[in-house]
Each structure stands twice: as structure tokens, then as C-alpha cells.
Length: 517
Image (cartoon, rainbow, N blue to C red; front, side):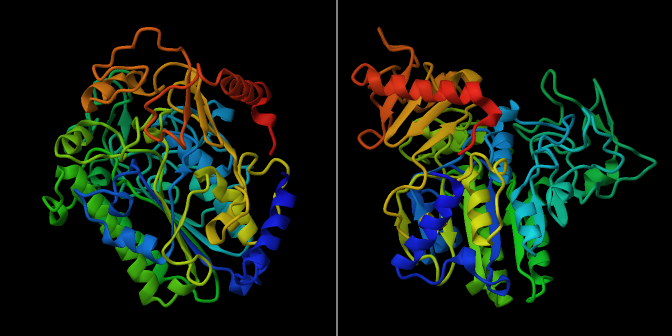
């Protein structure tokens, strides 16, 4: 189905289901404000409305109670940087050969000429702001000069304002960037990088102040580094987000992209949250995230705009079985619920994510959807919402899910999705009830084997000790309707299904960037 025909069908369906006039046809002054909260490494089982019992998330649960909860939502990548690329561009990150996180030495990986979510909304008359984790690179050359203007960056992609953590909270530099510049940087003490240097930063488990082999080291910029206090990052970013919301004019719609560092390691919750959960600092960091969501929702209430604001809450990928995740697991917390696998992998736990949407008067409260939806769909969906036309090359992998958000489509808007884990060899496809993985294992760190051993998980291919079972197939096929846990690889029972899906992946790989939907 073409994008034009999808828009037409959704407009008709909206009328048939007796909802308010199609949002994409609304006048400019009726367009809703939009708040997109993008959590980091939050797994499918990490919040209470999705079944968590060792943490309590009343503010996030409020979105489920007052809006819609999605049970089959996914990130098109199980890795942080490519996930964000997919979200903002509506294009698979593997099309530009991005499979891994980028760090301080990388240029901006999004072409500034490409249509992005913030550019769609800015061109529709919105004020646009990005607060939080960026993790998509800066500048045009390898090793941008961090002592000068960091451009192009968020502002060149359509944001009016940016404040946040430029890379990730586990890797240097541990500073804030506002618009184009490192905050508080003293010209007499510039940032320096090279071998043998140590970042002036507090050391935590999993925080690479002294980077791993092959990673860049950073020194200098003591004043800028001093402004970054790990236990205060969430409160600082939340304060910046709510302050920006309070300053918005009632005469102009706004878009806030709030990309939290919670709950990426290291787990450094503010002291007020430490010890509040039943699964260690991992859970405490979830509690702090829930508080941040509550602050945003309370600000929308206080400023009187909540009833005309679409709030979307989701995560960049599944939960990660890192040091803190292992401690949480030992305390009985199941990061990704019953799903197999973790961040970086093609198994469901790596990319099936919590996804909640609230829009008073448009999204039925307390509703639930089992339709397939992905983060990559937000560009086409929000473009439809504000009646922004899309060219043939705009958001080539994004589908308009507006009716999936607000109504009940007679058939799924999306029937297939390519899923990119960390390993290129494991580019997988979900189609209908089937998911096909072209190699053995998850395609994540250690091919998923260490996580199997730690969690004592097993399926028809692997024992709980991480050993390959005799005669296990080289490829994988799962029927998610019958087997959400991916306990049984059924590729030998349905070879024709696997062959068709394998051909679909081959077609995508062959056509690469030129594929249009």
C-alpha cells in the first residue's frame, strides 16, 4: 500500500469508527502538542503496567490508564544509536551501514538534507526541542573539535533548541552540550583526547572513564566536567524539559523530544531514589525515570495543555543484562518479562519495547492494542497528524500508524518489520506471526549465549548451559502467536515459510537504500 492510499484509508476508517475529525485534516490551531519520551534500555518487563513486580511506576502506568498500551511494539534496531536513527528519520539504520553505537569521535550520522521528525513538525509551525541523550554524532568529519561549535547536530535536523548528554552516560566526555557548544567549557582548559588520558569523572561500574581498549580517552575541561554529576543527570534533564514546556506560547504548538539517560548503565539514581525498589539500583533508576515522566505530565497539567497534547512513551531497545541488570535478575526482576534475549539481539527481548500513548479525546483511555507498530513509524504518523506531505524518499521505511494509535484498524497497517541486531549476519524479519533469524543465536553480544547461561534460559536450539543441542538448525523460525517465549524453533516444520522470509531479507539487502514502501 502506498503512503497516499494509507492516508486515505485511515481518514475513512477514522470517520467509520465515530472518532473526532481526522487529526491530519485538523486546522493548524487545533493540532496537538507532542511530547515524545524516549527511555534508554527500558525492557518490556521493566514497568508495572507490563507486569513488573519489583518496581512501581505509577506515573508511567497513568499513561496506560489514560491512554493506550501496545503489546507488540518494537524498535527496528536492538542497539541504541541505530534505534535513534530509525526513530528520527523513518529509515532503517542498516541502510547507511549503522549497526553499532557511535561515540565522541564520530560525525553526525544523519544527512542534514533528510526529512526528520523535528523538521516535519517545525515546517508545520511547531516549536521543537530536544532534551537528553543525543548519541548520533556531531559535525561532518571524524573527530569533531569539541572545543568549537558542534555542528551540524540537533539544530541542523530541525530542533530549535538542544540541551543534553552528547554521547551516552557510560562514555566520555561526561559533559552537557547546549545547542552547539559544551556547557561551561573554559578556553584555557580545552578538552583533550588521546592514549593514556583519564576523564575527570567519578568512577562507577560500567562507566568508561578509562575507556576499554580501542576507545578514545578524554582529559581537560574540568569546569565543564564538574557540571556533570552522575546522580543529578536525570533531575537536571527533567528540569530543563519542564522549564522549556513552561515557556511555550499557547498560540503555537510544540514538540518535545525528551530522551532520558535512564535506565542505561551506570545506574546512578539521585539519593532520594536509592533503596526505593526491590531490585537494587537498577530498579531505583526505573523509579527515577518514573518520577521524570510524572514531572512532565504534571507540567502539562499545570500549564493547562494536557488535554491537547499527544504523549508517547517508549524505549530505544530492550533491557540489557549488564552488571546492574544481572543484580536485578538475581533479586527476581525480569527485565524483559517472559521474552527470550536482551538488548543487542534479534530475540524478542532485544527489541520488543513498552509503548504507551495518551491523547485525551482521541485515544480511548485504558485501551490496549496488539497491532504491530515500530519506532520507525513515528515520522509518517506525525507527518499525517500535521498534514505534512511526504516525498518518495522521505521516511522510506515509515508507515502511518495514526489509526493504530487512535482507533481499531480492520487490518494491521504494518505486516512486516526488519529487525537489526548488533551483528549484521543476523538481520531478521518479522512478518505476521512469524519471525525469521538467518543464523543461530541472537546476534547480540556473545551471540546471546552468556545471557542464556546467566538466566538459565533454554529453547530447542540451546541448553540452559548455553550449549548447542545436537542437530540444532543453523537458522531460526518462530511462531510468536503460539510461542512468544521462542522456546521452539519450528524451521524444520515450516521450511517454505522460512524460505519466503529469507528471500524477503535478500530482496531488502539487494535493493538497500532504494527500497520504497
